[in-house]
Amino acid sequence: MVQTVLGKRDTEKLGRTLIHEHVLIGYPGWFMDNRMPRFVRDEALARVVDAFQQLHAYGVRTVVDPCPMDLGRDVTFIAEVSQRSGIDLVCAVGGYFEAQGIAFTFSHLDVEAITEIYVREIEDGVGGSGIRPGLVKVATGDGHVSAYERKLLTAGARAAKITGVPILSHTENCTCGHEQIDIVTSEGLAAHRLLVGHSCGRDDHAYQRALAERGAYVGFDRFGIEVFNSDENRMRNLKKLVDAGFRDRVMVSHDTVNCWLGGVPGVGSPEQVKHILPNWTMTHLFERIFPALREMGVATQDLDHIISDNPRRYFAGLA
Ligand SMILES: [Zn+2]
Image (cartoon, rainbow, N blue to C red; front, side, top):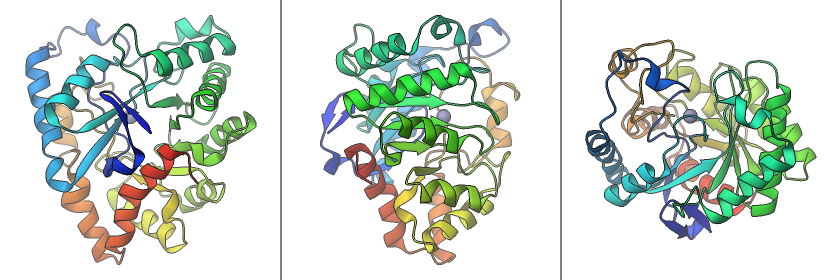
C-alpha cells in the first residue's frame, strides 16, 4: 500500500507516476523579500489544479511531491490540489540539506529524537491534519555530507525501516549518491529502498551506472531544467542505462515547482523562471522527451516500464 494525502492506495493502482514534482516551494525566509508577488491562496490553488488536471490526458494517476518540512511544505494545500484535480499525491517527511534548509531545529536534536518525529508523522499524520507522508526525504550538499545531513539521513533510514516507506533524496551536482547509499544500507536497508535524486545533473554515465549497479533507484528527475545539464545529455545517458540492462533502476520526472512562495533563489521572480526554462512543465516528458527517446530507439515498452512499474516496485519495497 502507498500512503497518499487522501488515504491508502494499492501499489497496483498507482498507474503512471511522476516521482518528483512540487506543488509548492518556499525557501527559508521566502516572506522577507517584499518585492516578490504575494501568495494568494485561491488563485494559486486554481493555477496548480489546472496544471495537475492536464496530466490525466497522459495517463498520469500519481505524483510524488517530496517537499521537505523546511521548504514551505503545506500538506493541506497538497491535499486540496489532489481532491480537485483527481491526481493522487504523495507527500514526504524529512529535512533539506544544511546550506539551504532550516537547520536550526534539528541541529539541537539527536538521531533518536528526529527518528521519533519522522515516525510520528508517518503513523499519525502532519500536525492535526491526519495527512500522512508516504515517503522520507533526505538531502546532501555539494561534494560533502555534513554531520547534520548524516544525522538526518540516519534518522530517515531508521524511520523508513520502522514504517516500511521508501526514501527519496536530493543531491547537488551528482555528488554524494554513494555516501547516501552507504548510510542507508548501514542501517540495514536494501539499496533499492533509496531513490538517489537528481542523478541526471551531469553528463556522467559512470556515476549513474555505479549507483544502479549497487541497486539504488537512479533519478532522471530534472527534465526541462537545462541550466545544469541539457535534456539531450539526459536522454543519451538514460538510453545508455536502458541498453546496459538497467531499465529497472531508472525513475523519471521534472522537479517542477508549480507554485513559488516568494522568489526563486539565484534567479528572481517566478515569472523570470518561465522565460529561462520554457519546457519546465509536468507534461514535458510526454510532449517532447518520450517521443525523442522513441526516435533514439528506446522501446515504448521500456518507457512504460520506467514510468509505471518502477514507482510501483519502489513503493512496494521490491528490487
Ligand atoms: Zn525537488
